Length: 326
Image 1: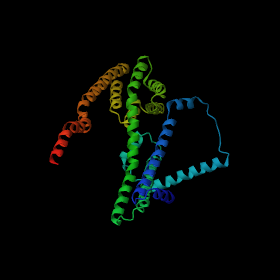
Image 2: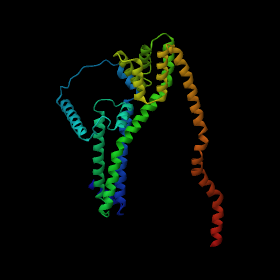
Image 3: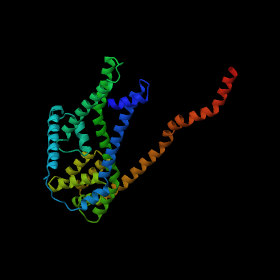
């Protein structure tokens, strides 16, 4: 770092400019690395790639090479360290951070170690960002100790909330994907039930059909089907789906199926009525969003068009006044 800073200082003679350029280069490098990781994960999650991987035959293998054994042992050691750290930093109690637990469930992170790992990562990011802030502050000796403490505290707070922001984004993206897939799944539900399949068989069939196009909802339906096969009541399993997704659309569907089972009415007719109501609801939401466009356009028109219009119309008059004053 000092070598790179020295090179920049030899090119730029200003006192503040080399440090600013160095910080910008570091930020650009971090942004490039993050963007590359995002592209890698998007390529891994490609539905076509998952489909091709599913068509391949499973191959059994063992770690025989010493290098692979070292990688596996280091990964196991990292997991053990993460588990030990999570035991110290995660909140204790039955109702501790129930909101975080609910967000982890809706984000698809449901293994036993997800809750502790989240707080472990949160602690690591907090310490890392605070340490980076301490290193960066050393390049600005003109700062007072109080100002340095304030900057470090702000950096630590940012590092403390970054995992929560990432978790919020993961949760919103997954819930949005499930909401986007629900209309297609609902139509398949109607077709399968009207063709004579039972509710359990319908859920299995729909989950299989949408496994490639909508993997998030397919995963939830597979879980519901597994719970039914284990002996859990159908309504209880569907209510669990409502809790895991948090969607009002699925909550309304479960309520209708529950009423249909209680009163003995046909599930096919219930699903068809709900499908028609859901289409009407989507149309109303689309009309509502379209009606809001005029109001939302006020702000960009005011901020973007009005200054240019003001400059073109009033600018010549202002220049004329300035020339007259001179």
